[in-house]
Length: 258
Image (cartoon, rainbow, N blue to C red; front, side):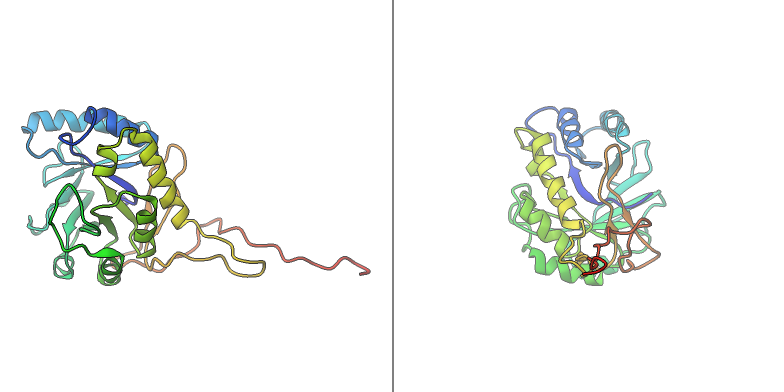
């Protein structure tokens, strides 16, 4: 199972404007393909039923539900806190919340990690200090796994800054949970991500601009597909072009006889 990338939605039914299933459905309509189910205060039976409902929504677009905590609730993808457990369980996809280089250095068989907070956040006020894009970049450079940027990501400009700092995606909670229109917000943030990772041609004869991301190159999502990232073994590998390759600029030639 490939690690998450793009815009990853974290749930919180206590701040959602409408039912959690409706928010997730709206976010999926706006391009989200990864959802992390939190709601740890619910009894296991209720949480498992909620997980089944959200998986059904994501299944229509090939999306993936990740469950916060060591219990995958019938799935095979979990996201663990920095405190443990260690070693991590052997599920198909295991992520972990990290905040410092020390915590990243403790990773063993995890497939990805979130790092936070990048900016101040209303969900966890006072939690920090914020890393900022500069701090995020430093952690990306030393991390053994791909990183998602978490904390205070609410605008397209912030999404772009995180991608330029090397994150394979952003984890978003409040911006979508509190949105009057989750689809519109998700579309805006996802579009910013796609634009940030899409190579741009500079001028005729020049190579296409590369993302500053050293490591995993996120794949631009297509309709009905999940946002994914290609990786090698162990440490992230340098970017390579896709099998089809980026479009190559055409060099003008002089007409015969001119």
